[in-house]
Length: 272
Image (tube, rainbow, N blue to C red; front, side, top):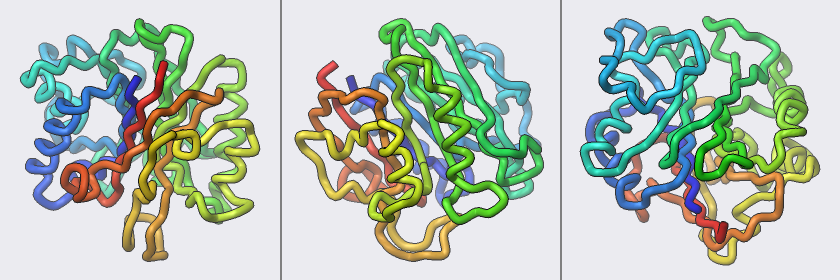
């Protein structure tokens, strides 16, 4: 099984159309079973997406999909390359004053159930601090939940990471086997903060489980939301069970596929 995660920074990126094509080209080559995406944007002012393009879409929120939705167009382009995906998208908040910002999951097999949970204390669509998480079960993996996750910062006094993690962890506690994929805003080298909190909650970091792995760095320089400017491993793929992970590879870093976001992505391959 292959799992991929990427904070897309979509529509915000310079030369976005070329970066969308680069993403689609890489996804069509790798063919991950599940793709978790964060910061999946669409223009508030855009017209609604054509119904014909939503045949493999599973609704799970009140915000309609617009014609320039990043996931919508990625799935269409993948289909044109013979790489069919089922998908879902959840609009979470207003971004940059002009986008519906959301999160998304793409699956090679049909989605049989979705799950959403608000993990921030606020659920105000106008607040940039609103955080929600989306999950799916699929036909090929009916006993497993896959979640796309984008959490806040450890030091945020209004919306601390610890509270968001507590809400998420309590929500998924009885879900059986769970994969959490996304931008956790939690550097792996910072002790006694978000990374350690997840690890102490009996989740396993696929990077550490991997038989083959690289540096794992997914953010370099100053990125949105951070005042620090250094190399960080903040995009993670966690599992509630000790999985047999064959490899963990950073992608879209200019070495393996072009840089297409202010984050790099991660792809892992497991034995099951």
